[in-house]
Amino acid sequence: MDLPYDEKQDIERSSSYVKKDSGNVRVTATEVDDALRQTIGQAPGEPITPEAALKLRRKIDRHLLPLMMILYWVQFMDKTTLGNSAILGIRTDAHLNANHNWLGTIFYIAYLVFEYPQNLALQRFPVGKWMSINITCWGIALAFHAACKNFGGLMACRIILGICEGSITAGFMITTSMFYTRAEQSLRVGYWFLMNGTAQIISGFLSFGVLHIETHGFAPWQWFFIITGAITLATAAAYFMWFPDSPATAWFLTLEERAMAIERIKVNQTGVENKVWKKDQFIEALTDYKTWLFALFSCLGTIPNSLTNQRSIIINSFGFSTLQTTLLACVDGVVEIITIYTGVLLASKWKDGRGYVAALYFIPNILGSVLMNTLPWSNQIGLLFSLWITGVGTTGFVLSLGWLTAVVAGHTKRITVQAIMLSAYCVGNLVGPQMWQEKYKPRNRVPWAIPKVITACYVLCPLTLLTLRFLLARENQKRDAEPREEDTGDAYIEQVLQDGTRIEQKIDKAFLDMTDIQNRAFRYVL
Image 1 (cartoon, rainbow, N blue to C red):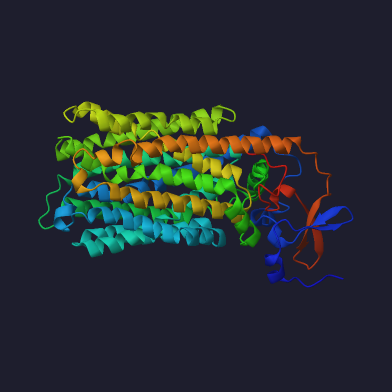
Image 2: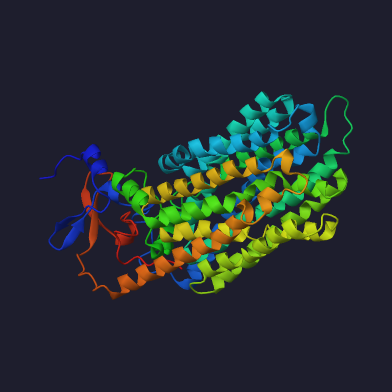
């Protein structure tokens, strides 16, 4: 006799709960990957050939990556509008002084407070639709910067930006893990993250362009916000129409291709998505050393990120004109594009080299920060070069995003670890802007100097990554030495057909939403 389905009871069960029956394993709906349940029976009977998998991946790339790259360009351009507008006259028109730094800080306070709620929403609601709502809200807030003539108005707009932009990196990490294998993820994260560099280039030329707009009563910085706000709203419309929520519902895939896309990432041992929040996975995330090492790295790596809103001001302080500064700031973008691309490419080619590559790319940052503190102030070119190479270490952060999605399994656990890492990212960005005070200018020795903040962070970041790699490698060795678990049988989920017939559908255990600790067959990417 079939027992009535109790949804509340299912939700409260551990994600690793199984019911054994005659050597097989029967699982509840909440334990099975949502995307897999939507595509049961749609996959071809035979295994996917390498040729078919490659063709499918290229199709996913064509439809997914352009949208991700465009949005990451837009969100970074929007995030750095404060720095660009500083040399376009906003500080004078809006009566800003020392409180200019607080506009950078308040953005990350809002980001921090709403980061975990954003991750919960990304788990609960369709990813693409939720992001499009957030993009729309921040596009409106960005355009409204142009109407603000005081600190209070600008602060309100920055708070809305911080709340909404907190959904993007987390959403992209989830999407990348949905559509790509662990071996493919770092390169794809690199593709969309290097658009930060493109944003810096385009922002530089856009700033240069608005300086030449002569409109009575409308300042260049106001045009800058109107233009970037309009671009953001256009992107929001594109996301609502074309960005997929998961492989199971992707509009550009046929029913068979959707099932194949899910089957293709079975090797990840992480599934695609599960809409149910699970307390045991949440607790596991809080007690896992990986969570806090990723968080420590994120915080240390983003304290120097306060340079984002200071670069134009620093370059201008070297003695360059406003027009020269807007163009020279574009070089930061070129450096970031080249280093991120080479870094993720090297990490994808170097077996078990992700941690080593990420650590290696912090060496130029250490050199640049030392030179910024020791070169004569009259050496404009040397100082400019030193500032430019401090952008190389961004590659390490990019690799850490792909690394996290590859070494954390269990959907609730993953969104929790992501939220903690990105919250730590906010903490670093909260601390950073407060270093740049008028009393330290123009040399800014306190932020740059050893053993002061920036250089120390650049030294500690690679050490944190190497520690994480060592611990993961040791865990892999322990699991390799463990005796193989006896096969507990196949896993099955009960399905009800349209005519009311109940059948049991076989489910691969890779889609049971188990965490990386629960699944002893899971091996960590190094």
